[in-house]
Amino acid sequence: PEVIALEPLLVCAASQREYIKYQLRLRGSSFAAVRRELGVSEPTVSQVCGGLRTSERVLAAVAAKLGASVESLRASPGRHGGATKDFA
Image (cartoon, rainbow, N blue to C red; front, side, top):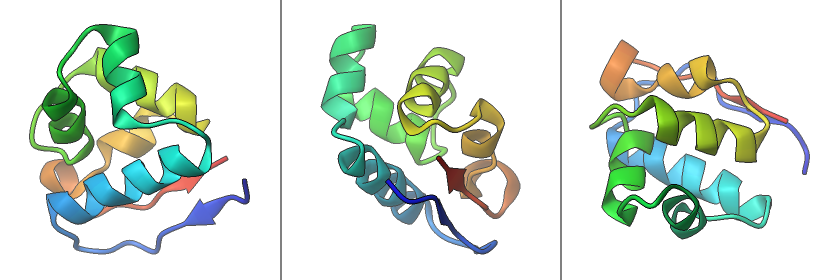
């Protein structure tokens, strides 16, 4: 898929989570696939992607599926007040 970038935005955790969820779908994946791969709950994946919980393991798995760095996912609204995403 085409590289999509978000300008720095102040967005809520739900928007961050939905953007990552959308990007996973574009690549033929999902929160459920990450959940199954890691043996965690789907709400855990969702909350980590929204910046409401922390898990290096979940972030690393999602980043790998998106072709992104863990650092780019870590820069979520719940963590640093804004997000810029460049997913390959």
